[in-house]
Every structure is written in structure tokens, then in C-alpha cells.
Length: 273
Image (cartoon, rainbow, N blue to C red; front, side, top):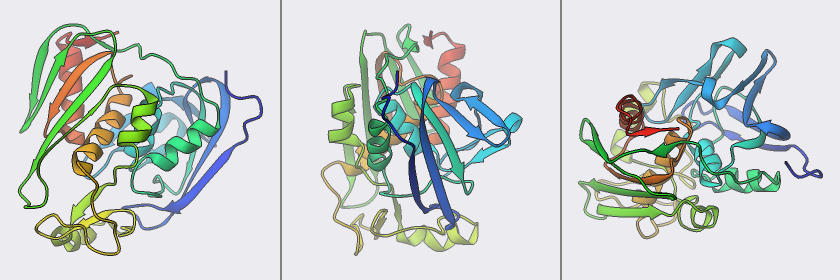
């Protein structure tokens, strides 16, 4: 049950890629998490992933839904184990960037009094899935445990690791605040391709070639790059009904790689309900 006194919450900002006004409205509901448009509602399992480069875009043609950069919002739902109690409405075709992470989204979801529920998805057997340069190692257990390892060829980043024990408390404390990031050298090409037009350097870690955060952004916190990749992983897994019960260790994860790996893991019976 959602909190009886909860009121709808509206979050407004600019979209990371469009640079246009984006608005997210969250309302309480007694039932599963659904996305709502003027044409109807759709639960998360009906969303189709349309794009996974530089973020995740989802669609549901039946209700005219098409929303970009959903990964941080989905990470907030997954990190809080929120599988019911929320109606999601998006105006502008993209989630607002806000803090460049998932903490603002998670705080809003908590204000709705959303219950925390165990995932139905679980790791059924040991298995390893590779997607390009990314590796995903699965092991059965009765709780959630995610580990991420990343390596960047930048002097001030290098190899980093991060982990999460599946609890909402750990997600809020250790993961939700980790900001998205990109290198300054890639900015012109991204904008030319119609992406990254709404970058806010106070929310996004804009990096020089050595991996140092440029002003006015705050310096990177310990393992913040790995923590953000972990945040993204939580959001990607949510679309599959996860994060699953079990241990998942991801090396060099990315949105596209995670979606390919999870699709294969489901087909191979490594994960299931």
C-alpha cells in the first residue's frame, strides 16, 4: 500500500540530450509501477528498449510512450526495491537531468511511501555471459549482491570497483548520488549528433583527458565512476524485473552490453523467475 497522505510529486529540469524542458510527475497508486500517458497506462514489463547508446530510451506504442534517459529513474526504483505504488508521467520526451544521478528521484519515490518488495527475478545457476568487452558473472544466493569493475585510460580514474548489498539504505548512502560523466573531448561530436545538448556541468562530471572534473563541477568522490556504472546497472536490470536475487559481478558494464547479456542469461536459464 502507498502512503494514504502522499501527494503527487513533480520534478522539472532540462533533458540531458535534448536540452529542452522535461517534467516528471509521480503519483501514488495501489498497484504495480506503471507509466501513464493520455492514451493509457503500461507496466514496466511492456516497455520496449529503443536505444541504449549514451542512455536508455524506452517506448510503448500502445500508449504513445517514448521517453529517453530513463536509466537513472529506473535505478532509483530498483535501488529502493520499488515495484508498486507509483504512477509515472513524463512530459517532454526525456527524463529531467536534475542531479545527474538518482538521488533526487529516489528521494521523491520515498516521499510517496512506496513499499519495498523482493524481486521475483533470481539467478538460477552459475553462469558467465560476455557482450563485447563486457563480462557478467552470475551466482545463485538468497539476497541481492552487485559488483562492478571499470577501467578507464585516464590518469585520475584508472581501475575502480563498487558494490551494493541490495538494501535501500546502501543504495542511498553509497550509489544514488554518483553522477554521470563524459570527457570534454567528446562534447562537440555528441552535440553534432543531437546528443548532450543539456549538459549541466554542475550536475554532470565533465572530464579533461586525465579524468579530472572540470569546474564548476565538484571533484569526483572516491570510486564515483564505478559507483555511477553500478547505478546504471541497477536501472538496466530493473527493466528485466531485477536486480535479481543472487550475485552479479559486471566488468566494464554498459547499457547495451547489459541488455544483451540479460537477454542471453534469460534464454540460457541462468536467470529466471
